[in-house]
Length: 167
Length: 150
Image 1 (cartoon, chains in turn red, purple):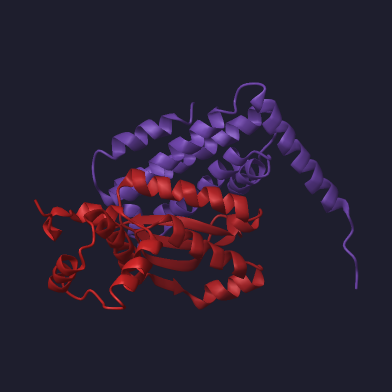
Image 2 (cartoon, each protein chain N blue to C red):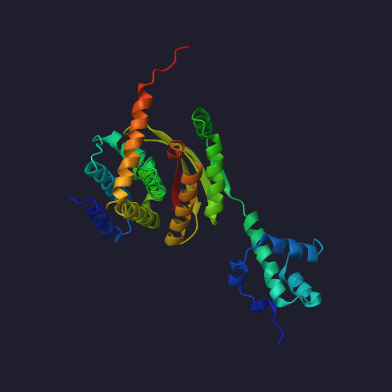
């Protein structure tokens, strides 16, 4: 019995991620873009690609789609001035990279300068709007903190903090 | 009083999904974790001043104790501290009024306390205290070096 596109569940597509597979499918389709499902089905029928191979290709497509999703980044000018004054610019950039790496569903990162009304302390806060379950986001946050503490010295790491907003 | 009791209050408050409840969960979660760290240091003979300045000192000492787990735990406390300030002072801040975010704050406080407690018995405790005392010595020595005058 032949298998069709309908046999491949969305969860299968979403659960698969490799960049190499995308390069492979791009090569096989000679640069054609999969703009609609009909093209995809026709291509699959004509190409005689084994289903397992097709799964691998979809991995790459899912990756490309997730990579193309824009993440809104907002850095207030006050943040740049504060970080320049405190020699934190490179760590600000690192924070952004690590947030993108660990919080795979991040949709928005808003950096702002915050202060403690009870002391003279100031710091940058990265407000991270992220979709997901509580346990998953906690796990991502723990991963971020592990890297943050590993790569950023003290007291610099205390001057850029994280606040997660589950959306 | 055991500061961990604040966590029981936070869990009970979370049964009602209201803005004020969520903000209070951030506050109680932070103070539970902060005070566990404070008591740990005091019991080890490391004095922390009372008042606002003490909050930074607790984080400062654990962040410089030389143990990765504790550094990570007290970086979490920094994040929780920021959110506690949002919850207490920034009434326009909506993310501290969401129940999922409040549950995360509670989860982080539990994690900080669990990590701190895992270093409360010997010989781990001795290693932590030694690390902090070494850091204090370095800071004190550095503060005695006169600054050069141009």
